[in-house]
Image 1 (cartoon, helix red, strand yellow):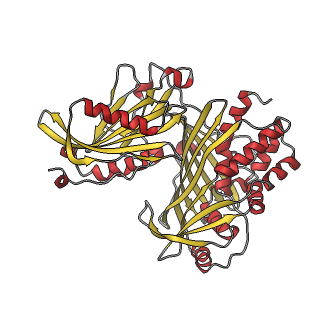
Image 2: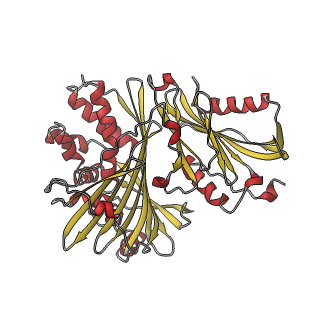
Length: 486
């Protein structure tokens, strides 16, 4: 049988495999008119700015590993330049952030890779002979490849993306045969073979993966493809099952892929004029030449009982200016050892911890967020309803008609409930609107957050603060005005 350490290796290998997969494609003709125009539109770009998000959750022997990754990329076509910022968190704990720059001069590629350790970034320079690995980070070429790779698309409605673009969504299918080409081109098969998997076994495994639905959003006016989305849960379950059966001589795998979600969104086109490489990166020592570009390995940030309360700073790696990342203690039984969870709170100078370090809160620009960890034998709804009952038991005065129903998403085990009430302050009773939120992080353990509007503190930065909190929690938080409270 494969050891638990070996299984953890596969759980942590998955995001690297996915990052390679999500930006790679295959070639094939398509007859759909809109798709054809989208392919033509791609040829007009000179630069792009885009984000990549991955949300994965896997379970093995009662343990769960959840990884959320966000990558931000600036890209210039000619001469080719890229800036990539990648940040991840595993089971709510932040990792060291990675930033890379790639340049091309007369056909020679140079890669500058940096690990952000908080106080200092450590840089390394290389000139890889094999430049194929750069392709996986090139959203321009891969959008075109996915457009031509999937089966004929069907329109699936209109909508406005989070970046404000008016789009039409098209749904298509990547067949099992096409998936095999995608995975081979992405280098996933070579990664697996380097770990000891026989080439013929991996090829047979890929052919059995089945089909993968894919959605692509095309901007109405320009026909520019500006977003794609894939739910790869079933496909990755097939890959992991094949890997484990190969290792365990055909026995059934005991690793469950609970969720694999991938999304790429173009933020803007043709507005990246220049990518400036920091002087310390340019002065970095060169790595051993001749190798291919390697996918960076994420390293856990060193947090201790003595220092975890000192790391609060804006989460700029996620593009946030007003939301900061802090850390709080996880319950001892959650991971069976001393561990820390990251928290996304309004960034200011009033961060406060509870005595046990498991609860923290902060406010700025009219928003307050409290975060802690909750335990229940039920689901996220139980966490939210318990929090609401504690408000009721406190004797708080609720705003008439401002207590909403608990909303629940069973696929992600997430729940939230809006409530309105009055709070006693130094300036008398003040109206509040709060969203009670719970998100599954580990079996029976939930992130609980109370996101509260403080209308008397609304300022010019309030709309941006709200937008960043929407992104951090994945919630459609409404933008209230003062007149709606008073």
